[in-house]
Image (cartoon, rainbow, N blue to C red; front, side, top):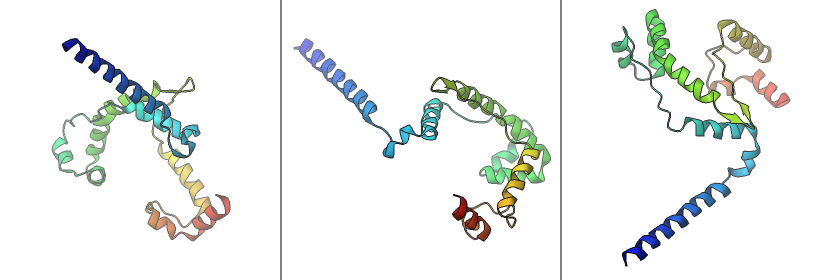
Length: 163
């Protein structure tokens, strides 16, 4: 009697495993987005980041001030007033950046490895901003939200004509 129960459970487990594999094989994103390279890259990145815990190291000097910050916006505001804080935050997140870079560079799409790049420097940001101003010279760096951008007539005209 006990042997039959074990065989039945083994059989049921094999059916469940087949069913789960079948679901994975036939489940694709809507509207054939699996064909879109950008969507495929995002799903590959999602798989690469599964099980990766991300956190910063403790800051040596300014940790008490960092723990008072409620989020990234508060941290940026505080870094404007305390110059050492910005450097210390960058140092504390560096191991996290290296971990993510290492994970990303091991991912592949069609046998081609992913590449990572460092953040843009001040000159690159200035070049980008000069290109943005060619589209709409009334924009300022403070205009960041979609609500603000809806009110920009030159930008709306550019998008209507070129996009």
